[in-house]
Structure formats: structure tokens, C-alpha cells
Image (tube, rainbow, N blue to C red; front, side, top):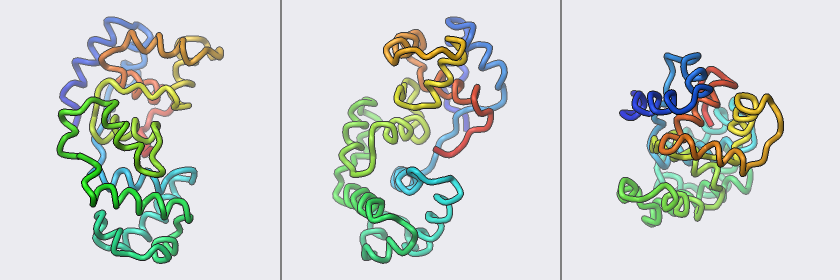
Length: 205
């Protein structure tokens, strides 16, 4: 389902920025769609780090079959060697277990997120081993549908900005951040369309 702010954001961005308006018109029938339940989404993000989409799906399928009930409690009931046998590295095994422990302990305050700022949620998430700022920002965009996230460390976003606004020339992150200020409070939407300018089909992060 399309986010309730999507059309409003598109109109505001198109009025303000002709380049962005042209990118949006070139991709008229696609929009940001919500990802799944928080624990599953974050666990999948950890599994997928630094491996191909196909390999990540294979590991995830084995992990889901091993755990059965893919919940924090389900993960914590399994011994580490059992998790590693699914194809997880030692480090990712630790990360998945740490994520599950944070959820089980209530250190991840899902029920408070609607009242929390983007930055407060990011600070909470990066306390989990294996979740850095980029993963937290992707989660805010794709799972929580936060409208004004601007993941400046994302290489796709940087490339999209260079090609669309600077004829492919290298520019500083500060310059990109300044451009992003013109898209507030809809920087997630602008980012999403810049990704589409590089790859028309939305993909799993």
C-alpha cells in the first residue's frame, strides 16, 4: 500500500525541483512499500550483509527452517552451532543472537517508535551488534515509512545525485547534504526516486 503522504510529497518535490519532477514522471507507477515485522526485517538485513541476494535468501530459508518460530525467543532457544550450521558466519551468528536478545529484553522499544524521532530510533537500533547507521536508515525508510530520512552514506544515493544533478562529476557529501535540504520534509521520497533513476525496479536492501 502506498504511504499516505506519497502524492503530497511528489507534488511538493515537483514544484520545488524540476529535475526531481522529471525523475518522478519517468517512474509513474511505482512507490515505496512497507516491509515486514521489525524483528524479521532487521534479522534479514543482518543475514544479507555483504553477500548476494541469492545467497542471502538461501541462508535465510535454512535459518527459518532451523528456528521454526522466527521470533526473538525462537532464535534464543537455538544453540549457536545450530545457527552457524544454517550458513551464518560466526559474526552474523553473534549479531542475530544479539538482535534477538535486545528484542527479548525490551531494549528495542517498538511500541514507543511512533512517538520517537528518526534519530532516537537510529540511536536505539545501532546499539545492536551488526546494525550500523545505514541499516537503521534503510529500516526507517522501508519498514517504518519515515518520510524524511536522508541516508547520505548510501552509494546508490550518491551516484543518483551525481548523475542527475552534477553530470556525473564527483561532489562532496556536504554539497549533497545541501541539495537534500531543498527536499525537506520529503527526503525519503527524493532518495527513493533517485534509486529508481538508477534501477527502475525496487529491490530488497
